[in-house]
Image (cartoon, rainbow, N blue to C red; front, side, top):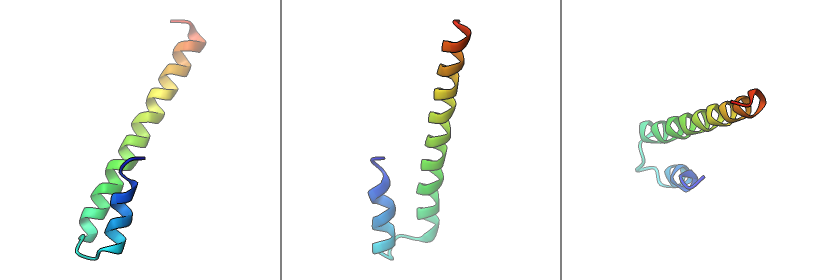
Length: 50
């Protein structure tokens, strides 16, 4: 969660454009999705014993 302060800084400092905040949020959402996929993949690997 290293990037979280960027988002808060964006809200505190209006010079951050809304689009930039949305980009940061989008990137964080993508990272979470990737992490979830990796976790699922690892679980499946463990269950199937591959």
